[in-house]
Image (cartoon, rainbow, N blue to C red):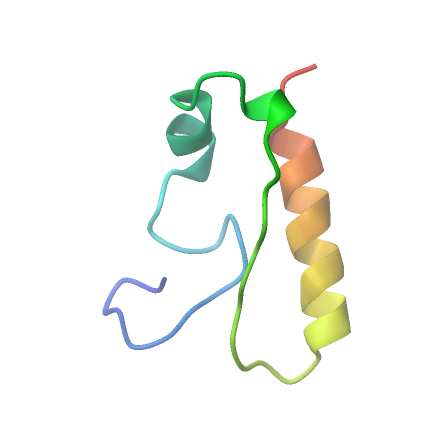
Length: 60
C-alpha cells in the first residue's frame, strides 16, 4: 500500500514493514504465503519482483 492508500504497490516499496510483520508469525516457514496485487502494467514482472523480495527477507 502506498502512503496515501490510493493504490497497491510491490512488496518492499510500500508503507508496511513486511519483514517485521512476518517475523511475528509463529512457524511461518510451515505456512503458505500468498501475494495479491491488483493492477500494474506488467503483472508477471511484478510477481517476480515480489517473489524476489520475499526470498530476500526470508530467514535463513
